[in-house]
Length: 113
Image (cartoon, rainbow, N blue to C red; front, top):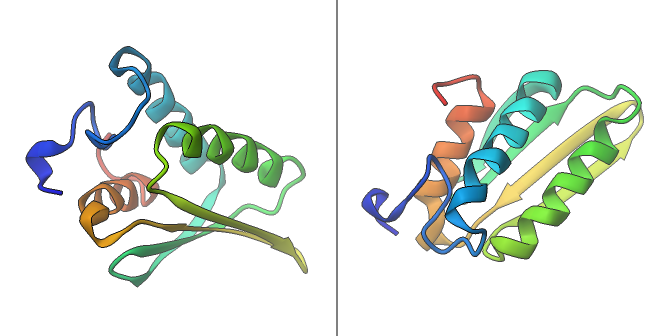
């Protein structure tokens, strides 16, 4: 997917979420990132790992958000892991959607919205 195909911030044109709802969803991700992301690592061209604050409720908030996201953007793969005082969220996309992951990584790292 080319960057020109991305619409409404980092949401991909392949997203089934109505365009009017995309800014709200992006704001939800931005809020999660601002509150919870403690580190981000690109573990492959199509995979991103976020280390999240292990505070109570973080994993639940992340799980609820990514469950809703997979209903509209089925190209995402999310793996949420909680244990031993750590919470991590691994995000994967098919190669065709790496520009979406690139944009998401910038936002997770506190980049421009």
